[in-house]
Image (spheres, rainbow, N blue to C red):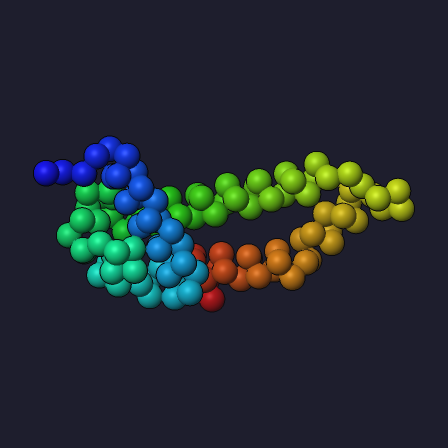
Length: 114
């Protein structure tokens, strides 16, 4: 008996979550499908039920990371500005913050740029 559509969606999310974690830690080229699927709790053969290729998965992981970063930036922009600051200085502070710089380093690792 196959899995329900809802379970298939949950399984796909689990694979994406495992890929995000492993890609950040080891880079895309540093993670094999076997290790990825094991981390997600599935067999390697099930991968192709969800993605055409590892590149398709990587594109989805990167797109999700970009969406999150855009959401974080929108939150910062929408936050009230302290009376003694302006938007430009707030954006510069955000861009140079430890959290943002850490996200950039992790993003570079995902893209294989480190």
